[in-house]
Amino acid sequence: MSGETLRFDAVRDGDRLPELAIPLTATLIVGGAIVSRDFTPVHHERAAAQAQGMSDVFMNILTTNGLVGRYVTDWAGRDAVLQRVAIKLGAPNLPGDTMTFSGRVVARDETERAVDVEITGANAWGHHVTGTVRVRLP
Amino acid sequence: MSNSEELERALARYVGAEIGPPAVGPDLVNAPMVRHWCEILGDANPVYTDPDVAARSVHGGLVAPPTMLQVWTMAGVALAGGGGPAADLQQELHALLSEHGYTSVVATNCEQVYDRYLRPDDRVTATTVIEAISPEKTTGLGTGRFIDTRTTYRDAKGERVAWMTFRVLKFKPAQPAQAASPAAAPAKPRRLRPLRSHDNDWWWQGVARGDLLIQRCAECGTLRHPPRPMCGACQSLRWDSVAASGRGVVYSHVVMHHPPIPGYGFPLAVALVELEEGTRIVSNVVGCAPDAVRIGMPVQLEMQDVDEELRLPLFRPVSGAAEEAR
Image (cartoon, rainbow over all chains, first blue to last red; front, side):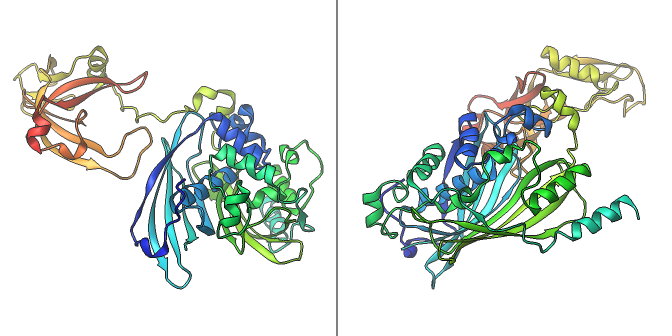
């Protein structure tokens, strides 16, 4: 991430965030589950995931939340403050795939110096995650 | 009372209930857990891990990534199950639904609102209320019920630091048979399979051999595509086929952006190609930018193995055609 933080005054409605491609390795999926203390077997044990109709272990929602937060602060910079993260999950993130984030500024709040960013994380199956992130800028 | 009425009554008792005493985070917010999180997620924001930079930041010191909110009170290895008694009302509710066949669970929605970022040595406590249980819904995963919960997170002083609404689907897996056959659920999406019947199977067999065939009336010689039993010109049911040269022009086209159907690349150039023999075929134009496709553009057949089982006759602009069209 860059050292400079975006200034609220420099951000326009409709601004697009640079895309970010996240390779979906088994390391990321299992590691994300473990660092988030989510030991639900479908996130680290293939047989448990297959019993639920999936081909392999799939990413947990905490990891998705973390990546969404990272995507927005990678763009906005270190002094950007996340205020709200609201996401909806769709297609599962499975090992061997890639999730590509895209995002767009959809609202600006002058009083709070905060912007709403609409984000999408797409993989080969469709949209893994869609959502809105509110971030306050200096 | 029917079984389902009984279940509805049982479920209603959980709505509005706090799931149990507040969950107290077993660890204080701490630098090692934050660093492990940032390492695996590739989050390089120094306000989470570099005390010097963090001190000069808007936070005035190290903070935890706000999206780690749930981590501090997660149940850990207990989530792997083991058949013990339910530890709280939420687990009890899940167990009840499992007994009624809703054996699987996935998270579908999550909203987190942060009053402040957590800092090292914060002790996090979470209070969760079951807000709603939906009637049975049919979803892509199977039939199930959505459970909405609202969790309030507080610090050691009892001040709210964040709140979260969370929705899970507790469902009956639509295809439990896949459990026995991992291959049944492909890891990568593939293009839709063509609908093959006795009227067109011969044509797909030609494609599999690398031949683009055109059906020809054996009475009057009229060519037709797609394959069908009767000649539109003379109503004869007798036919044979000829091999197409593979040369043609784009008769019409669209560039498809939405919906992004799994297995296809988007934007997708879909063209109606008029072969030099006179019949037209729906296909894709490859080898040029989708927005460079033009009506009248000369194209050449390109047989492509789009996956290990499917070969398709696609078309590529003849050399220079894409540039001229711009």
